[in-house]
Length: 192
Length: 107
Image 1 (cartoon, chains in turn cyan, orange):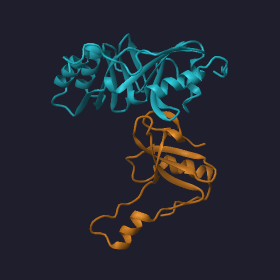
Image 2 (cartoon, helix red, strand yellow; image 1 turned 120 degrees about the vertical axis):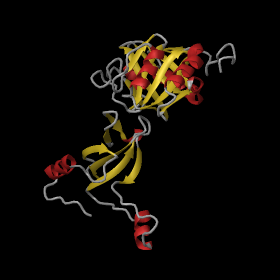
Image 3 (cartoon, chains in turn purple, green; image 1 turned 90 degrees about the vertical axis):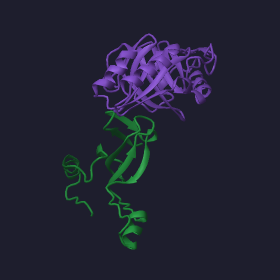
Image 4 (cartoon, chains in turn brown, orange; image 1 turned 90 degrees about the horizontal axis):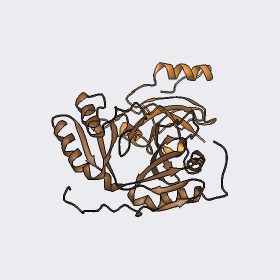
């Protein structure tokens, strides 16, 4: 894996759109799916050692730059790290968890990630997802796994004006077009 | 619209984020059981107009199965609980009796 292609190619080559919010496909991001008992110390050490952030509480997205830990399920974390460190990170986690019941999988190339920036991003996402986008239910720093129109996606707000969306790479174009449509100028809802 | 609470994520989930799994609390009749019991286990399901126990999977979220008690007529939800439960827990039964006095669980 480490001696693979020199330049990672993202699904949409960094597509961008400016509307009610700006939508941008983010550069390649290392993503490692980590499954196991999240209360287990070796698993915690493996996750925090690679991500360099605290273990996330239920539904939390602990992020710092390109590193972070996303709480995906009671037994699943998504570990974020710089793309070119992924193979190394997987190896180090595998080593730590070798004798435990845990699963470490590099899913970097199976996902696409978008960034939304702007004031109306709660409304833009609310047009596409059944999840409650109110501040009370989804404060910044809390991850929500749900759907955007017809496909699964996970998203969280870094702040009130910046959000990140992760979806499967195979539906990256679909999700980008959805976000583009939902952010069409003149289509502001003003609900949230 | 049906909104159920995922006990694993502790969030309100929309029906469209979930996968329906049919009736809950079935007793499996497998090898060794007679044909009638096996037939009923495979095909016979309760279809009440009123209080019902169901399995749901948080398919667009954590992927876990959970159980829900709801009213099929009004869509009122009495509560959801973890799937590792062979019988409806007491607090769910209490919630149902509170809203539907005189209700008894068909066996």
